[in-house]
Image (cartoon, rainbow, N blue to C red; front, side, top):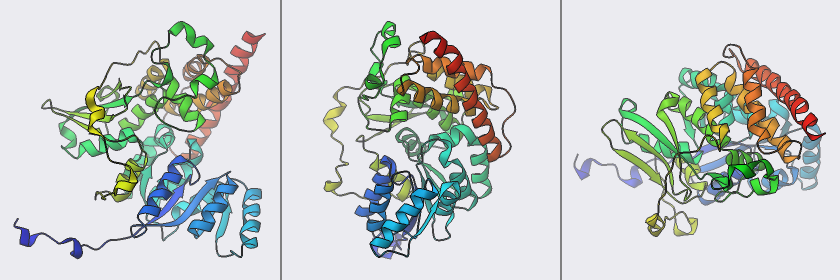
Length: 411
């Protein structure tokens, strides 16, 4: 094609994407809003789900004036309404709970939903958005871990794109553009190894929550930081990758890469390997998902430019499954199928909370999860309600395991 047949930039029509952000007050939500600030001609905030953080929700209402905002509870919603009225703002609809999040995600004006509510709390709203035909920027890995088969099937039925925001899956998505799916031999998810990759295993019994919350690379919420320390987070990413990219677990590999410079790699059948390299800034994968299939130029002030001198040392090593049994359990769960992945996620959330509260030791996390998996059986859920029921059963089982095994041990 000659240059005279190429469309000029001026001929392109720039369509404004209208966003719903589920988890607007978290790190992903705030980073997404930062991008909206930088590209007001491309992205418009339509609706927000803000959870329990009413102060942040109020500030976001003042700045973004969403059409709808959802809070976790009715009392929080009423409080926000009062604060908005005091400012003379009465044209923002304030809703609450799961129904509120679903409304935020399915407004007719919205065409792109950022799913960033942590845990299964965001599952119903994300699924509803898929069924409503919205493009999804997926930062909630628990959705695909617990209900991946249902969400993938719904996405195919409604012809919805699921664009990963997690840095590793976002990197795989970028690398996959270099070949056809049938040409992929395997993918490699990189992991920093967390704060304990070199800690003697004998010391694991005495790891404190304060030590586990000191991640060497990323600043994240408490649960995901502990999951990174146990490598359960990487296990969830393995399951998510299997479902996003339609690959069996044996084709999804993990490697310890402490520099966190290479975010993931894709190995093709001819021996070629493509790697995605960038700064460790979540705005980059968020912007990639929001702009897809385009790439949007950023200015120097965005601080997303990569310094090539940091490539002077790149270390890769296989994960030690004795040191990180949670990663092993994730592979076993995705291979087992049925309700195993639901139980894996639910038991982990309960166990991590118990560890943070000082009720179980660090190694009590994988011990609890393994016991719950052994007690879990049944076919794959047929609906989102089935998923939520199985999640509740697994959580109750995890609490019983902790009460039975660790309460006695402390006496």
